[in-house]
Length: 256
Length: 225
Image (cartoon, rainbow over all chains, first blue to last red; front, side):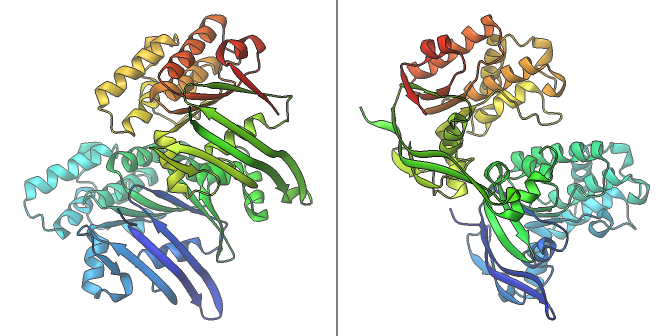
């Protein structure tokens, strides 16, 4: 077995300003890594660099394909990269509107990804879409509705269904519960936890919420000022933080 | 007999950066061997580092010095210094850890919480759930609660769900942090018999017991911190 994703010294500068600096880590199949830190710490920049949404200034991102071949993201053609992102990977945006096509129905949002991997049979696409709406707890009779008519929590669940329908091996999430009501958050979190465990997915989750990290992740990476300052098991970081900033972060939370 | 857990020169110091960098030394040069099937209790006054020692063995605290070697699938792994993914593998197969407190996951029913460690080992779901039912029944959790999330359970019920989860899968090393605290007489003796069964199946037990009588019943060796 080898690492699914290998990140080697990835940096991103915005002109003279540092986005993220010198980040390295490996992600193995089934692992869920949480990247935590305050706003401006570089966690979203790093997530975009490793998920092919943004070109890093320097460093390497390598992915191990289903065929067991290791590919460097920057050495792939644009077409290859887009195919990988559409099929093997998923990306859940904080704002569901960025991850959904708001102009088409909920069912089409899920079905579209299936068509991207070659499914053409309308009946099968519809029944798979229906099955996935059920799995994310959206009533089947809402399949033909526009995502505009959905609540924030439903849109987020729809975005998750759209991402998972092609059975990706790796999913990236940027503040998946940000901006949702606490009760809606809880439902989304245990739904995500269940899906990730059942499907054996690997995931990288960016969050500023330590409770989200605790519930979903097995490993954690703490960022500050664009740098990774501490890494370890999630419970170890939360119970025995070493760095001053991590201690401040953990002690600022009422209860994790 | 050879040990399954071997601790050498273990120390733990906390640096409190939020409090002017105060350093607190909790453990210094702890040496300890535990054999398969042996039960050892850790004694000492409050603040002497009993729970800290268990957390260092489990890997949720980082050691400041020394080694914590654990026999895992026939090979020694040093928890102090192992990669996170290796510690996760150790926890899944080798080291179990039971405290008084259940970390409740919203909406997951009690029966699934108990069965989860077995499911994680790829045990067939019906076998896993069967084992979970046996344990919940044994610890007197009323059957009508099994399919509810423990979110609304009483403290004692949550504690017993957590114990059931901790004993669901066999672990060659079992760490127990006051597992019987605040349980009634009947449930206490059930937990003690579960500990005895785990030992008979070969588990080494390292435990912290508040109550002296229970400590004597459960463990044959004592180490004072």
